[in-house]
Amino acid sequence: MSGIIALLLILVVGLALTPTIVELVTTAVAGGQGVDNLTGAAAAICNLVPLFWILLMIGVVLAGVIVWLRK
Image (cartoon, rainbow, N blue to C red; front, side, top):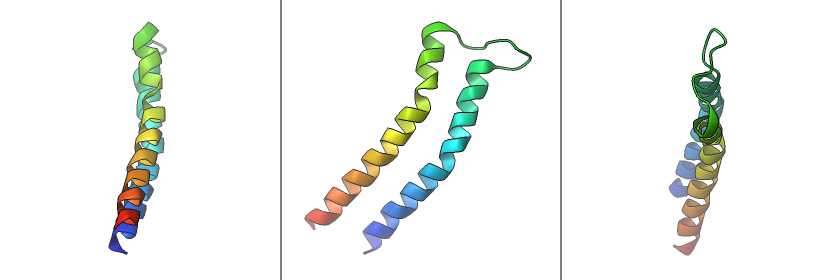
């Protein structure tokens, strides 16, 4: 039972950090004073960081559930 609680805690904390990650990525790409900090491929890859974060959260929780169900 404690495994499910830990997984839910990881999921809640990870999803709570998502807006912060999106804000940091937006700041990194857009920069300040109208000057682009990142352009081209670097900006495209940096814009994918929130997607990878969400996929990581889903993967961690699914792996935890699979391990928990095998016990």
